[in-house]
Length: 62
Image (cartoon, rainbow, N blue to C red; front, side):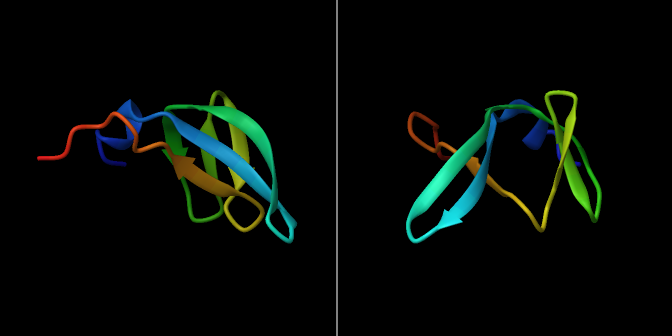
């Protein structure tokens, strides 16, 4: 896992269809990534079931 991912707040989102989403976890650092799941805030989220989003507002680009 890249060092950059461990420093970014990642939000876990589940699609409810037709432009609706449910925010499952408001975010934290990525602790572990496997082919099946991503661990954030001591919880595992299946990659096929959830979306993982990063808020790019306020970030500095080089």
